[in-house]
Image 1 (cartoon, rainbow, N blue to C red):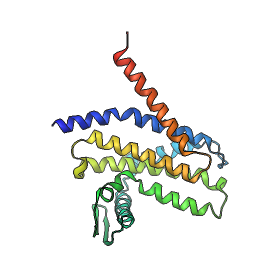
Image 2: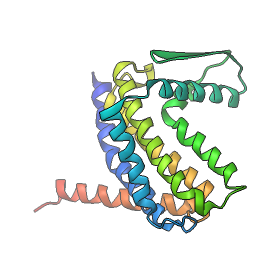
Image 3: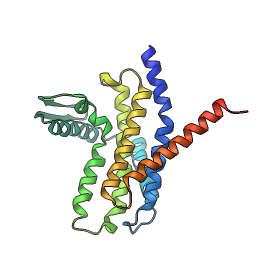
Image 4: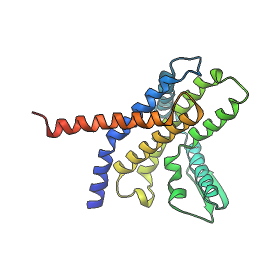
Length: 224
């Protein structure tokens, strides 16, 4: 019980950091100059709203989520020098049989948004042959939609079946997953676009996070 309460408290304490990194990512989108569509921030939000509407009113793409989840398991296994013996996917669930398992392999599908990674690789290669000005706004839209898809579907998955590492608290688990996903997306943008420097992304994230922590602290303990 103590561990569960402690991890829930840590999860709550992570919320200002989540907000800080999210604001930094959102602000960095305004620095894009490769897109002919100047409102990169709006395009990103359109992608998020698009998936939210799809999820709420049309259908939940369970098969796509399971496929992405197991794909990241397989990729993580290969990166760690292991071998994949079987790969099975269905709407009800999936499985990957490997000859190796570790902390990274088990948790990678939660922390690495599969379709953000897939669309980023596709964009990288398309940008070698087509003008980034043509591709950029479409890419940002798909990243917004893919990130929303990953976070919402992961939230549903954690409610139903949590790996052992997450069983001590849903609040902590999802807060940590959300934070790492924002960092991963921010780093991908920094890798793909010279308009965004990774140092600026982290500097902005730490600045906004610090400001939020200070304001909360002042309201709780220094309010007169």
